[in-house]
Amino acid sequence: MNEKKFLRVLIVEDDENKKDRIQKYYQDTFEFDEVLWSSSLVSGLRVAKNTNPDFIILDMTLPNYEADAQTGFNPMRPFGGREFLRQAVRLRLKSKIVVVTQFETFGAAPNLVDLSSLDFDLRKEFPDQYLGAIYYHASMSAWQKKLSEAREICKESIE
Image (cartoon, rainbow, N blue to C red; front, side, top):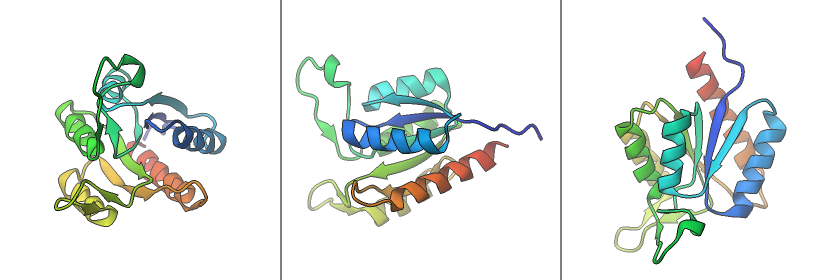
């Protein structure tokens, strides 16, 4: 088979500090991968559609639109990542997607969902694209190893 050594990666993340940490780790570890970035649900889908990334690092809680394009109310969507996955399937993107989130629960009572339940549901709903959920915490490094493992699974799936 024709081995592809480097990946095109899209980070969809609205939190600047988290994005910077993920991007720095990723580029330090996989220096030849091309890394793109978007900060909202809509712009992330647009970039994904136009660039066809191999691997998407996706936040779960996202705003609909970029902050600078904001002309009014732009609420955070607790399940924006799930909507992104749905739209990725609709657009027939072949990208492998991992969720990296700093929240352990999503939504509000009575529809509160914990990360492990959400991960379980997303694995069932998107078996061909979704690689899993990674809990991100700025003072921990476990997320880095899990992100590297997800990238390796992605790379193996396209070789």
